[in-house]
Image 1 (cartoon, rainbow, N blue to C red):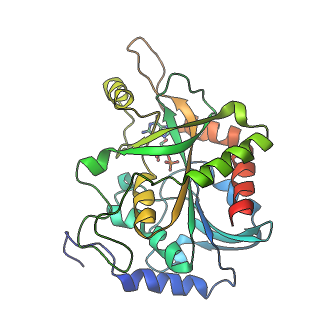
Image 2: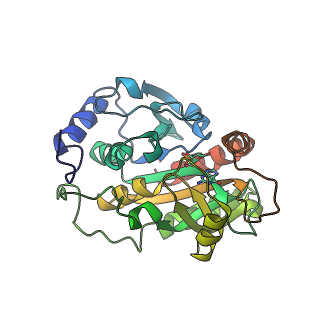
Length: 287
Ligand SMILES: O=P(O)(O)O[C@H]1O[C@H](CO)[C@@H](O)[C@H]1O
Ligand SMILES: Nc1nc2[nH]cnc2c(=O)[nH]1
């Protein structure tokens, strides 16, 4: 047990998990993908798969949310090795913020250089439609501003510096490649680029909160991703992120719409194939 102010895991814990995983597969991925709510079917497409349930992996938390299967899948796209989290961890599941991000540092120790994060999110921008895919160009870390940052506590210099820069969090070159890929696939009509914001959850936003988040400059809202991105940037991984707009948030007191996870999972299913094509082509290009 570590003091609250310290990071939850020791460097040796991450290392132990990474070494254990390296002994389970001969694949040495340069790209890792974290699948958002209902988007995990992507991992099924990997060739030469080794799938490991989270419960078998030393130090790994468990997935408790519907639409997050709870398996780490190693495999290949077009000969490019990739490791994929079929299910992510969220702060609202009761995990310490450093536990939510545990796999990211493990990926770094596996030799991963690029992290692709995907999520389901509510659309705050009026111009967005349900089913749009938003490439994340920046984020607003609401829990971070309230003191909940995964880098809080003593800094582990073997991963990165005390004060990491975040103005370059989302890699512009990968975003351009993703845009090109989307055009090649004929997906341009439903691609957006915008700002993702995270709330701690699990309750969805009130109308006043949605209006506030929009006023602050956010285009989409979810309950994940940002802690993973911060840890990834801290240890030098390049990051590409996308949000599937699964629902439009309610911003009008006369509306009868209600945010619900069933709708989130339905929209994810509807766009799953497009997302899988986009991410697999991207992995094949950058892996
Ligand atoms: O961010 P992902 O994991 O895609 O899931 C999103 O969807 C769930 C709410 O419907 C929340 O967990 C939110 O963060
Ligand atoms: N916070 C939040 N998370 C989501 N995940 C999917 N849709 C939403 C939403 O509307 N709000």
